[in-house]
Length: 153
Image 1 (cartoon, rainbow, N blue to C red):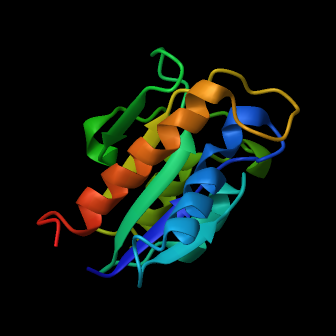
Image 2: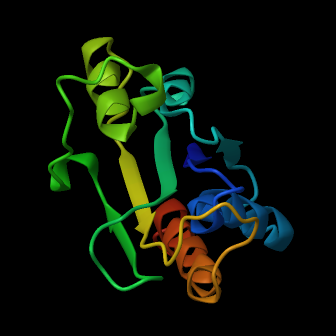
Image 3: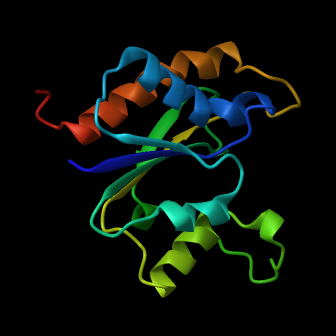
């Protein structure tokens, strides 16, 4: 399967760096050879540069979902109501909902997108993940492995 794994987040804001930590874990384990790993940091607008119809995309991000810190949820964009702020004119506030809406409008929305969200424990100026979010990284990698190779072989 032709797959891109895209990390979103800021490694200088504690658990917001979980996406980058997942990419690092994949690189270190060499468990998913041949997939493309991309870190767009906090620039969701950059996501548009990396979405390609015909390829599968897995997006990893810290997501405040009201769950327990470290909980991991995988979902498709159509499985969640993504809220778009109508008054948001700043590129700095451009998030995944806006990126997906724009990708649909310009014909760049891939058919296969999986979002893997990790509930953060803390988003503060700090390098490094909280223990509970760091412990979630292998679960995220397992979800990605299952998505890339559903037959396990």
